[in-house]
Amino acid sequence: MMKKIVDLRDDLQDYIHIHGLLKKWEKAKNLFESNPFHPSLNTELLEPKHRLIYSFRIDLKYRALFICLPDEKIEIIAITKHYRKQ
Image (cartoon, rainbow, N blue to C red):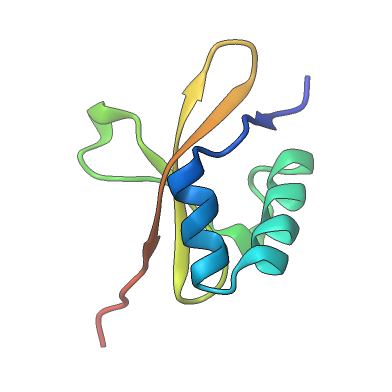
């Protein structure tokens, strides 16, 4: 069964529009739903691991944080800027 991202909450949809991420979001969402571990998504389990919060890359600056729901569903819980240590 394929992973399916459930509809985004209104605040997350607003965030995507405000930050001009709609095209990048759609591309990352489609890629994730067809292959959650595609190398360009850099999907990872975040620390602390026991919380079971994961993330995947929307672009180099933004990441989607998500949790796994029953029936192969995915809920995006936040979209955040991703800072890399220099």
